[in-house]
Image (tube, rainbow, N blue to C red; front, side, top):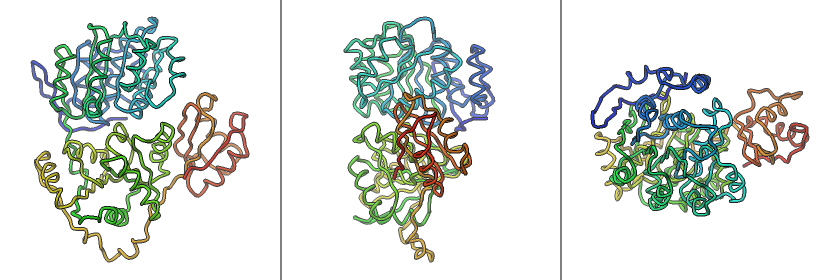
Amino acid sequence: MRHLPDKPAKIANKDQVHMTTTAFSSLPFSSLFLGPELLANIQSLDYQVMTPIQAQSLPAILKGKDLLAQAKTGTGKTAAFAIGLLHKLEVRTYQTQALVLCPTRELADQVSTEIRRLARAVPNTRIITLCGGKPMAPQLASLEHNPHIVVGTPGRILKHLEKETLKLDGLKTLVLDEADRMLDMGFHEDIMRIIDKTPRQRQTLLFSATYPDEIKDISDAIQNDPVDVRVESVHDNKKIKQVFYEIENGERTKTLVALLQHYRPESSLVFCNTKQQCQELAEELWQQGFQALALHGDLEQRERDQVLVQFANKSSPILIATDVAARGLDINDLHAVINFELSPEPEVHIHRIGRTGRADKEGLALSLFMASEQFRVDAIEEYKNSPVSIDKTASLQTPEHKTQKNFRPGPPMVTLCIKGGRKDKVRAGDILGALTANTELSGNQIGKIDIFDKLAYVAVESPVAGQALKILTEGKIKGRKFRVQKLH
């Protein structure tokens, strides 16, 4: 049974009501007034018990109220607003009834995927994703028949509105997901111009991981007496071992390598503050024998997809990212978060480290700072209202260090890229069948399979990667031959 645990939370509006997480955790989805088909699909996905954000927000959403919700990634907020959108959807009315704005393409894709899974109970629902960095022509073709739900990034949505290829006259619900990040990225003007093209009578749901003054200002401008829901954003320190290391100037990369060799995490998400630093660090680690991938805004969409796939399916043990690029990134079993550079904002630091130690598992958060950056450590302590653990890099020089110096975390999986995807009618089952039917490979040697429009990716255990590549190269998938290559 899926349930995303969280810390005690409260719901607040004009009449404040306080409830504990335990009380919310006991509420099943069947306690909501949902249609039987939608409820059955929710239960088939094993979403039987609501998370705190779902229990607090869904009653208000289903009543058509505006919502101002503070909740971090991984709390189940996407399912909360998706269920609300689908509950009130009129499938026979062929116009766009819901718009979800997201800060990044990655998050928009994740949101679309989750809505589609929940929409299986609502036949003929048309959901499309409109994001920058992708060709306009396919999007224009998709918009020839009005979609019921549109998910996208502000810049591309605004472009379609200005071209009048997207019409929002019949919009019932507007969702701003991760609104704080959209404002950080400079989308405030675009968002307001989009809202100007929506009906005044609409439901507006605003979700934000943090609650700066700008969020209150935009809420006041676009919402009508919203229900105010807060889910505690500070993570349980008991689940995350957090250690800060004070370093000298010029020692960052050297210390990062020492941390990787000392702690030996199977998967590490390394945060840098700039795109340039991400790319330079990835290249430097490769030169030192580490398999590391960089994720930042300068990558093309295909490259971003490929990087995310390889890290998520355990084909690469190290991902180096900026905060913007990693927004919405949700990786299971992330062993360590490493702050190569501290964020200037303590709230962002808390959200970074909260990506490890999920689902009651132990997490590891390691941070590097110089004496000149002590003020950032102080700000984190003040935000947490508790001291942090600071250690010397000399502590990494253990008696075993000589044997650890040559350690390089190797990935347990290898990714094979197939030059055929959704538009070629390729399904995950077809790839799995091609690899395991009449071969010596077993299903448990095959990992995650990701299907995109024109490409598909399959993870296979490293020892059998060559065998799997040969099977797919020499064989057929659905009776057709496709080009296949191994990613590095």
